[in-house]
Length: 463
Ligand SMILES: [Ca+2]
Ligand SMILES: [Ca+2]
Image (tube, rainbow, N blue to C red; front, side, top):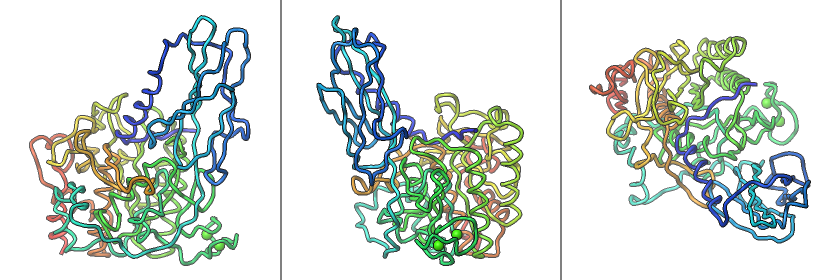
């Protein structure tokens, strides 16, 4: 299977920062003969509803291990939680979904340390709690969303807010119970929930608010975070660019942020079929990609067919240009090093590079005068884009950085334009966004439009 690469710079930084837990105590010499095993299941994923997971240190070579010193649990959202046990079992009661590292420190008679690590995920099938009224937040809280100021969103909203348009978030799922997302979650009225029958005959049982292609169930809840950030930037009812567009959560990434090209293909078809059966304008945001060199011919063919399937049925796809280089920090020219789906030539795709809030291209963003259409704010490490958090019980918002997050800004703009005029085609919307962008010398040779999006000019030209 082929794995799609994730394009969120912020998440990469977060992942590496978990290494700080290794700075404890003595120098690690590496002790063999110890491993970590999960006792209650072979699966690396714990369900939040299970509420318990038991791990044990398995010692093959007790002779060289003095004692099991401590267990350390590291998650992305709770920076470090340390549990010290002299015995060898570790019992974990997860409170939050997400990726965890469990680290066991051992020591031999010479005081050499060894660290043994196991990654595991905590997922959840919590049901959608239902559509609610749009929450009201104060002006001070609203000020956090300074990309909305940079994009003149208050004036854009006088043109429209994406009414009647659906944005399919093909990603790690969506925290559909976030109070700012609940008002905008798509509901499939042709499906009766919980009767174990595929009422609308689309091949998916009880799919009332999207689908989880990882676990094959109707609960596409986000256990990684990325998809919730995308949903918030494009269509949060409070701070999205399109505050009245609907969000269709389609989960293809697992708890570790990996996904298969085949899942992306299935999800594109699902969103396209839903657009046709419900006669609703559909914008797919697909913030992951795969490099040309990593995509075998047969998968390339299937991926192309799925994009064409969407194109033939009037469905739009927004794709990021990607974060460049092996470190995701040095943008590359996609005209030379193509990635997909961003570089497929279909005219229903808008490929988006990332700028800072002043329209200056970021160092991490890939570019391409032919293959990248426009640029939009994607945040910088010093000035990230504020969006909805996937653990709203802990934080309502978080800052994100990456081309992954420039794409949903454009998806939101496309939704506003389409909501304004439902007779437009994806090609026409793409053309409006390109033609109305603000050109700059720095972007002239980097993207097709030569500029970054100008939402207000786009909506005024569309009246
Ligand atoms: Ca169904
Ligand atoms: Ca049903």
